[in-house]
Length: 399
Image (cartoon, rainbow, N blue to C red; front, side, top):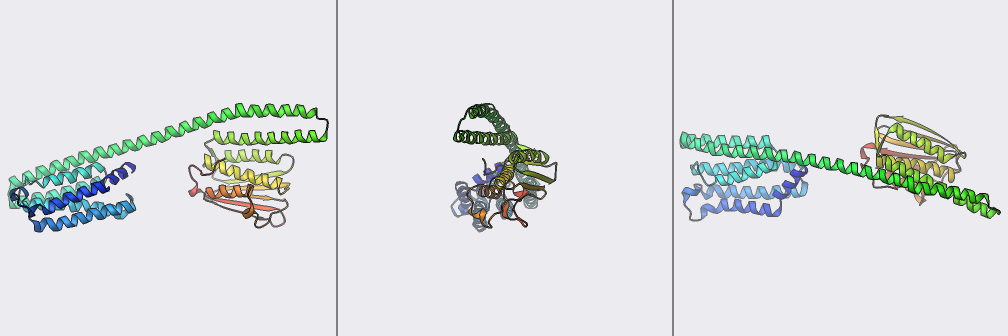
């Protein structure tokens, strides 16, 4: 489709359209000049109206293509009609000339070559060229006899054969180009996957090891602290390193897995939520849906971030001690998080510049809807719905 679109853009470009209209104009006005009628053989009363119709049709078809594109049903119909019209113009002029070797065959061959280079509409075009040639052959058989009809059939047959060869070659070339593009896309995906895995290893073995070293050094120094202020400072630094290590683990996981099956994503979320809750809160996670379905890497990353951010907000800001998470994968991916914390203001999501705002951005990037509201009986309920049909293959939200 891409190669055909590129070819049609060339054919329907301003320069190509202007050249085609000029050819049609030359065909239409040629009988008005003093020329040997044995060369042309057709009259202006035939060529002028056909030329006007042909030029108008070509201009209109080009305009429809530029405005609606190759996939437009109107363009497809006008493109087919153009094939019939040009074949009719050429063969009508040849028939009127009663010259089986008319110079108008040159225009017919030019039209056949143009149609053949696209590789599309092969069966339709072959039918049009065959029927038109058969009609012209029949006309010459009646008017000029078998010899003239045989010459017309031979010339028309060469044109049809040329079209069949050219359109077949163009079609195979389009398939080769499409296969090349698929292989290139697969190679790019493999290269990106390998690079992601390399970055993940470097982060884990380099930055991760350095953070672990800093953590144990701070632990050792904290044991020598002699004042409450010093111990508090060491505890704060230790907590920040722990959070950084935790975030690094998330990034490494996101880089390594380009896609995961639904059960694998749920298992990861259970582990992460338990780690986030620690001894402060209890988290239950229930999941249902199509277990065989895989979740694309960028979608999976954003869903994981949404759940983790919801748990972190509930514990750190809402002081929740019990959280219930429900996930369902059907026509829509639904995430619900209930907590027994201090609750939330009805307009908190709109006013938020932090966690809730980030969740809202991620959900909307996946084409979904996000709500957060006070829960009956106390606490907060967060709900995100993501239509699977709108899940992008590469998300616009990362990090």
